[in-house]
Image (cartoon, rainbow, N blue to C red; front, side, top):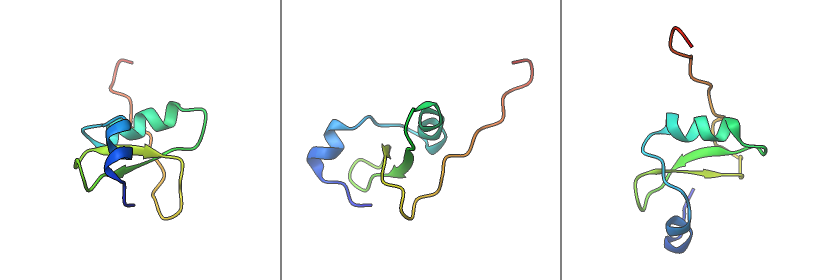
Length: 63
């Protein structure tokens, strides 16, 4: 997915795919994470064609 500079600057950035997926799983709409070629961070998008779905991370013991 190609993101323009203006869009990249307005979107929230996540350092890891796991962090972005965790937020996507909590959202009311279907979101997917992708790595931005401009900032090299991860963003979320509602466009889902060709992107993998978020994967729930296992909870640490004791939670």
